[in-house]
Image 1 (cartoon, rainbow, N blue to C red):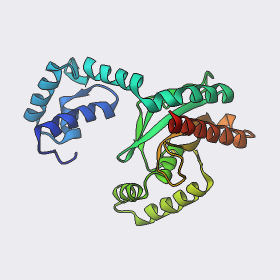
Image 2: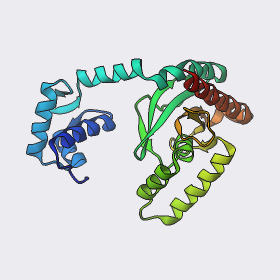
Image 3: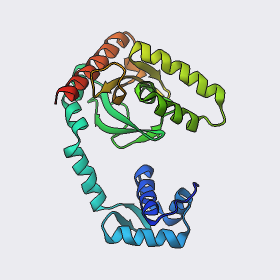
Image 4: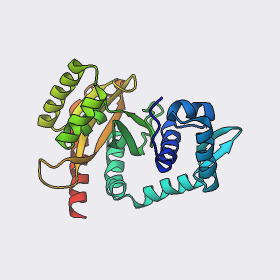
Length: 248
């Protein structure tokens, strides 16, 4: 449970964010535990959100409603980042035969904006809209390594409040990633999944913070002997998308 926000607008946003992050319908009891809101307050927020179509109800469980889905569709259609990335992602997925994700950092989480799935029957299950912690995985480390230094330091402080050794270890790893220009992980988020991630930049200056990362996700059984080629292809795709963002 977290401290409940003070204003009505913040409480409404907290309910919406909780439903979006959970990934499936929630009961009032679950929402109380997630938001820290009193049950009476929560019912008022839900009633308002239902009236406007942002929340739907089925058997006493609540989920994002049709207006929320319209917002998501509008984001897909209007997002410059997604549109600039989709073609290069499709080419990488076709050339490698593997799954490709476009990921961004929001607070202390990694969120998948777009996913091109592998056609193999055995493939990674990281789906569009999924959110995971910035603590581990190729995508998380790429995003942390190449974001604004002050923001990175603040996130590390928040995530490792009681574990200075872990924070320092990750900070050292991020310095290495900045030098190499990419990062590889093996089973850090999902068991049996190997990933390589490279940053996407919106400006040409080397020191500019990245806006996203491209991650190629591969079952570990299909990686041996392909590491170098997969890394090169992912970095090339990230550079291609960066160039498009800088020229559009």
